[in-house]
Amino acid sequence: MKKKRVVIPGWGQVTQRKEQTENLLDPLGLMAAASRQASQTAGSSDILKNLDGIMVVRVMSRSIPSAARKLADKIGASPRFTYVSAIGGNSPQSMINKAAGMIARGELDSVLVAGGETYYPRTEEDSKGTGTLFKGLTGENVREDMIGVTADEMQHGIYLPLHGFPFFETALWAQSGMDLNSYMEKRIGTLWSRFSQTAAIHPNAWVKNPKTSSEIASPGQNNRMIAFPYPKFLNPIITVDLGAAVILMSEEKAGQYRQPGIQPVYFLAGAYTQDRQQYIIEKTNFIQSAPVREAAGRALKRSGLTLDGIDGFDLYSCFPCAVSMACRMIGIGYEEKRPLTLTGGLGFFGGPGNNYSLHAIATLAEAISKGQYTTGMITSLGWFFHKNAVGIYSATPRDTNLCQYDLEDETDYLAGDHPVRIEKRVSGKGIIETYTIIYSKDGSPSYAVVYGKTDQGLRFIAQTPKDLDVFSALSTINHVGKSVRMKHDEAIGRNIAELI
Image 1 (cartoon, rainbow, N blue to C red):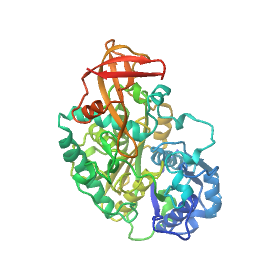
Image 2: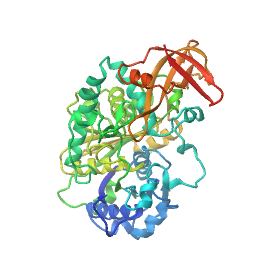
Image 3: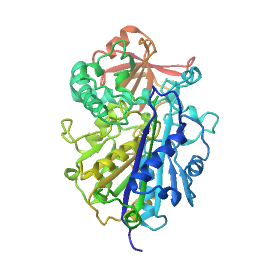
Image 4: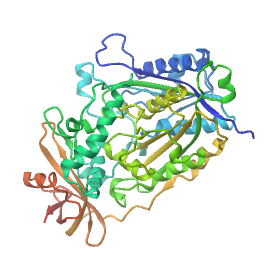
């Protein structure tokens, strides 16, 4: 079987800004508009009606059953292959990896990957429903991909990404040895300020005004605390209306449409891994992720490039700790001069459900086509470093074995250690490994949650007493490594950990 090279000849992005009041599009409308842009970029509107495959990132903001088929009808396509992803921010890159494999094997010749969300509340009814990331899935049977935490974690008040990612940041803060103000402003605030500056010049970004490190890291009236140590500006912006589309083709097929003077964009390789330690409570520690390291390493090895050979990165940026973790695992320093985001990230460009990375891919493809970069890496993840997808893109073709990579990752995707042992009901002394404080909408602390180890080395989760002095202590000095006295409260079904 002859291996086919895979190129990305077309891409499109659509932003339906908050000021818009007429001719509003739903998620399918945004996907269709982005798809038409992609076909024009690729050289012909006829590309859409001749597509072999359509893959759609699962819509979260609205319920749209059979979204890929409905998108096909909307753009006048008759694909013989359609697919809708599961839940996870890894989905766009995972589907690119799969589409590239199918094209390389000759199963398909052209594939459209599209996604769109309309989360911005434009009516009073919308405003009442924006509190949940999963509102488009209401009424569906619960599936594994919908669940990011265990029943015990939910019992202790951990449900959503905004509750879970702060645990990793607190552990990274402890590992840094810095005081809180220095860590938040000089490291995290500075990083996110750079991201805001990138968003400010991206034509499709939701937030266009750059922010200083101090503005981002300092809690205040317009930057209330959400979950320690993250105030609002360190969280993703979910309430956005954004759509994106990317077309993949074999090099031969794309050559039929290619416009002169445009640099071809080659997809060299991708990789996918899952953490054996699916849930936060199962993690060996909170400052490393073997699956993140493995996914990036596989993709680089398969592409034939080295880390030094990558011109720019878009590291998945739902929260700062995700970027920090990727830097640590891939081998990039905090002072890296190469861009770590191409869009501005989920906190400024916008976090449209599962679809953010498709915007990053489209942005990278355009940059390569214009000669701004010759290579780029996209990383993406689902839930708490559980599902990880990476892609390597280039202006220069390489004869990589694309026809095998996605198939290999379907059978060999687990990475990292097996889950740690857990004690569900605890008593006696323990050691804090990480923690967060969840805040109410008025900015006052509501409850604190601790992960730690018992004297027997078993992992536990617990809430602290709801005491303002405890909240103040936890949010002033890092308590990782400090002792707690624990008991299980049968009446509320939770472990309680008191600071010693």
